[in-house]
Length: 266
Image 1: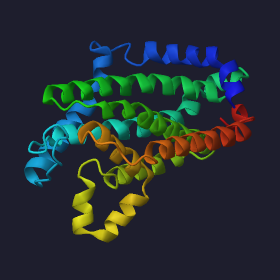
Image 2: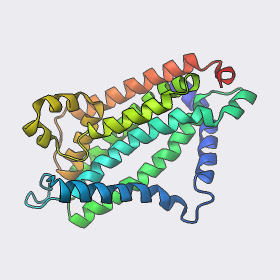
Image 3: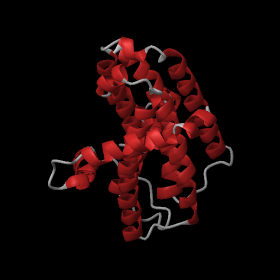
């Protein structure tokens, strides 16, 4: 797998460059639009859940007497976006490149990874905004360094799932609609809009379901290191990386075996 990735790196970068130059080509704001949507979503959710439903965020790591629901929420959103963005972009990549795949023979996973690189740039911009938010709040700590492997693990997980869904979506067109609905439900079963303690104290059966959601572990770990400025248990980050790499390997392997005749399927 690593050999194939290295050999095709130039083609992956070529697809990434194409997508990078065309994604917001006709827009006057350009890449600023990549921040507009999550920020508007942040404002809406923050207003509804903090003002209407009175959801309280935990105390900030730098000052437990202060809280910031917006910072808590955006930390979870950034983690979720890296997963969901890679899943959706990967799933739709084969169909958007169907004409090229029918005419030219090349590794079908290269346009998927090219699109994913562009998605990673977009999430990187969101991370910069998140860092700026915490600097403004004075919530800074050495634990931030663990955000890198946590986000990397979430990206590997999302990409592995994206590979498997891409091949399924190429064969069965209904997959994209099922995935959209599933991701919508999974979003609310991830402790992004609420702290995990709220669920544990009100509905233990629901907390059990939420804990079965893999993204719960990624989001909780990011809340620990970015918001609460706490080191998670020593096994958590290595476990997330191992899990992410395993899912990526599985997705890449399944995709490679099932995509040999992809030009005919599309």
